[in-house]
Image (tube, rainbow, N blue to C red; front, top):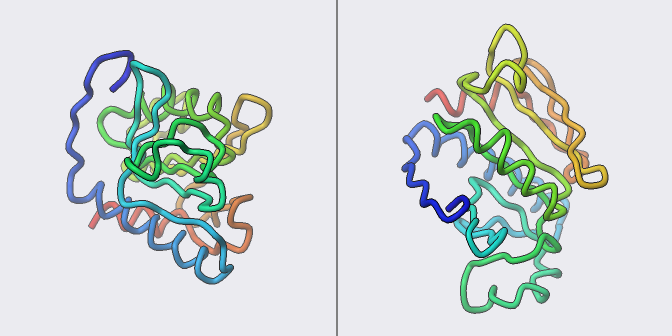
Length: 177
């Protein structure tokens, strides 16, 4: 729901494959580093009374979930304190992923934001010219993200998972089947 309007887009199977691949790779890092993080299958982030998002992948710090008053009864996050990373896999409503969600996640204080655009759907201002599959990773500085773009054989770089060894092309392949 964005500004009171229900946005109902059921992701494609290929979109879900991309989501699953990212979640699996991050889960491996969490296990290897023995971090107190969890990736819930689904949860809702309430930005305001009229705006809530269901992120494609969200990494939560379990030690901080005590600050989420609704968490014990509902899979609902109301503050950014437990969120370590959010990843969105781009679909036909790419404007929401690149603009609206990113801005709201930054204001919520989410330290790292990934946008996986495996089809190169985003606007040229976001992914460059020529348009091509792109992973955008934003690191929060103040209330805005400093963004880096990754293409094909680029190795991703994450401050939340500094030991992560993952090429952008692996995510692109997962989303293409």
